[in-house]
Image (cartoon, rainbow, N blue to C red; front, side):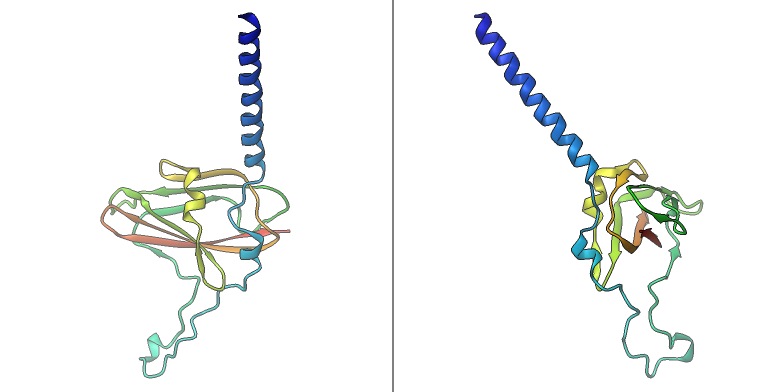
Length: 168
């Protein structure tokens, strides 16, 4: 009976060692975007025709548009003006607008702004804690990466903000 218990105990220990070491390896190599996505050309302003529009509206759509009717978006980490060499910590919080309703985290969308917008929201969901994104040690390919964050409150008032991550 003791031999059978010892074999079962060793099998459980071996299984736990494999499971724990596999989980640790995954955390070290987390990436929100792939090399292939990073290699795509950056998103450009819309090339739609503006003929016949009034002069005040005769400007092409600009990617750097920000709206703040909904929740307040605070990008605490990373610093847009800093270049990063290694793994990056990300901390973005979403606060209720003083004249608005509570934040609806289900409405959160994060789009990687490349040749076409790549919705990476599902890749980020595991890092959502209450009304913030809190991620440590995220790997990004070399280059400049631009993202648009969009979020709504419970009354569907939306805010959006663009932020960049620069990697050496």
